[in-house]
Length: 283
Ligand SMILES: Cc1cc2nc3c(=O)[nH]c(=O)nc-3n(C[C@H](O)[C@H](O)[C@H](O)COP(=O)(O)OP(=O)(O)OC[C@H]3O[C@@H](n4cnc5c(N)ncnc54)[C@H](O)[C@@H]3O)c2cc1C
Image (cartoon, rainbow, N blue to C red; front, side, top):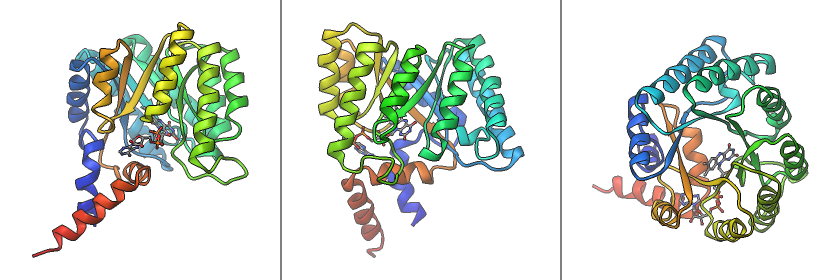
């Protein structure tokens, strides 16, 4: 089953190695996009694994500079020890951000499930005081996000707005696509009115059209951000219209949780997986 799953998942992933991620990033640059590279992996609980991940990101950032790749990295807090302690996670982000500051690459903090939201925002605000080239993802499916965004924008924070990829309880989160999209629209408007340097991270054509309209009313520095392998036909269209686009490029061997989230986002992907499984079992 894993083999079939991988045959679908590989469209979203650069490959197992950092070299493949850098190649994918160079290709994105060639097409006119910046690259946002993520080393796959999450919920790391051992100190040695966390340390290994920190070293990997330091190496990646040096390689970005060496290979003159335009863009940066995006890191999940539980890759850097948040499942162990907030203090350890904060220290590790700081080590990585110091390295990236010297090479001018941007660091994004991915947002994970809602039990981590408070700590993640706390870490972001601590670090944003000292490092400017740092952004954080905010999820439109969470009911708390409007308040969080208001607080973050008061500090001048750099935001990536996403719909949210994690299953959440209905006490905390909007459940229907209609409600999530409505909240996305509200938060996006807040970004255009009060924010600057933000990422509109969605593949949703209607929301992208909304953003284009808002960009005419408010002159703000922003970019569209999309995942590798999704809406590849739309990326050059946006570039052609003069918008900035970044591509989020994951790599590494731990591809399963990321791929399952992508599969669930679209019924057609599940059907594709089913039909590929059936075909491969025909003689
Ligand atoms: C750059 C970037 C960074 C992200 N970072 C985070 C993060 O830190 N935390 C977090 O919780 N989430 C993150 N996400 C994921 C996000 O929350 C959504 O789960 C994901 O983007 C799907 O939502 P959507 O906005 O594309 O809208 P949807 O309503 O899911 O999709 C809209 C349309 O996009 C296309 N599409 C969407 N997904 C797929 C797919 N898998 N395969 C093929 N077509 C598809 C389809 O045409 C679909 O109709 C990130 C997304 C992006 C683009």
